[in-house]
Image (cartoon, rainbow, N blue to C red; front, side):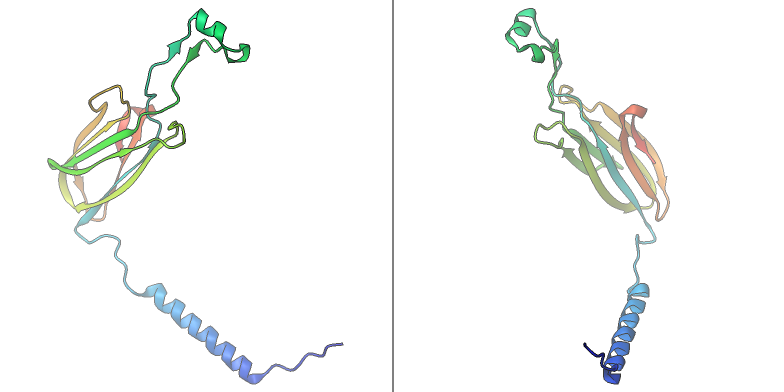
Length: 172
């Protein structure tokens, strides 16, 4: 049978000091150092989307000869490429290039979504914003374009999104 020893007063004092120090550290870092999300005269533009690009090629209708060469369980009348187009993005603000980049499709077969997230701190005020995107390698120019004059308030956050089901590029 093991008997419990009485609590050591020195251990209790040490534990109280440790908890007190821990509380002081938590209290300090809950209020300091001061954090400023954005400077008072700045706004934030976020480019954020996750979408599929168009297939890189057209679907092909198989001829009867091609179908006859395939196993019976593989005789789909049409075949389409799995690979998706990367999405090219270009953003100009007040006639100057703000961002240019490419969001490649995910996956080993390059058939997943293209995802991009970027943040741009810009001066608050009135700006001409031009966003161009291309999600189809078979089209040479940009197939989604939006240009708009915007007034960004200090600390405002503007999100640029691509929603093909709702017509293209959105500013929110």
